[in-house]
Figure 1 (spheres, protein in one colour):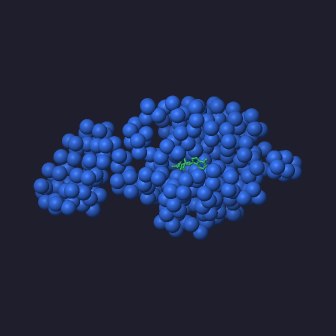
Figure 2: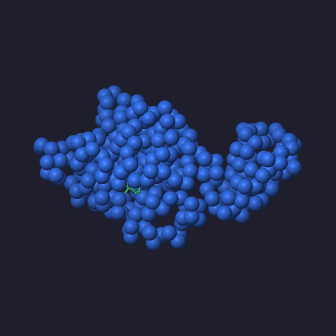
Figure 3: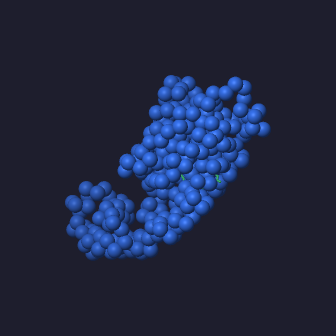
Amino acid sequence: MTLGELLNLIEKRLSEVSPSWKAEARTIICHVLNVETLDLVLSRDKMVTEAQLSQVEEMIRLRIGRYPLQYSLSKQDFYGLEFYVDSNVLIPRPETEILVEFVIGEAKRMHKGQTGRILDIGVGSGAIVVSLAHHLSHFRFVACDIDFGALAVAKRNGEKHGLNERITWIQSDLFANIDRKSTFDIIVSNPPYIPISDLANLEPEVSNHEPHLALFAGEDGLDFYRRIIPEALVFLTDGGLLAFEAGHDQHMAVEALFKEHGYIDVGHFNDLNGIPRFIYGKKHQVEGDIRCLKD
Ligand SMILES: C[S@@+](CC[C@H](N)C(=O)[O-])C[C@H]1O[C@@H](n2cnc3c(N)ncnc32)[C@H](O)[C@@H]1O
């Protein structure tokens, strides 16, 4: 079979399951044949080997079973870097790049070249913390996840991009294993936020293959905001920033939680579809140490 014939065959089979079947077919061929997209046009008459054919067959079989292509490829691009991904982690989503962009801007504005500290809660693949570390060379980072499998993937990505010297990886249920004497200028999190009742409405790629630990957050999807917002006050520096990604209809509830716990400068901004998806607030400056009040 020629490469051109194989491409047509893959496109036909993927068109039954994926709206981006054309792009996915090209990605599969390029991955298996180890060629660039441009080579596909120039090499349509090239013969495909038996080994390549069976590798393509296996990838199509998985994809028809709605297995995410990124897990088969073991990679996903995020904020200009390539991340290793497997089924231990949520595949990083493009909208989360906007949260990263915001945090980089705030960190640079707050610190102007001095050393600062940032905590990422629920690192998954490490997409947020590794991107931040790549762009904020004078910051140090603590990154936690409750799941050892996710933490191993995130660490691998920190290593891949040569950033592990500035990132401390900690297995922790939110703040449970974070040293209570630590303080952070910024705490960032893209926590699980899907209400459990939405399970049936999710695409099979998500509901059947991405880790449920990364997706669901109780009845209304707000469980993690309810836990993180009050406890973050113990760890934030005065004036420190807490910033979240949230579900498409959650920003008002999350902003209310921020205000309820005395945060100032509470606000939100939109994703590229105009959905208010990112919410933030700052710890108000206090006389004395808030930890004395909390302990
Ligand atoms: C929505 S994913 C976000 C992953 C990554 N930060 C991203 O933006 O692509 C949420 C992550 O939170 C982790 N998680 C769930 N419950 C947690 C908990 N109680 N403490 C810490 N991390 C938790 C999950 O394992 C998952 O990796």
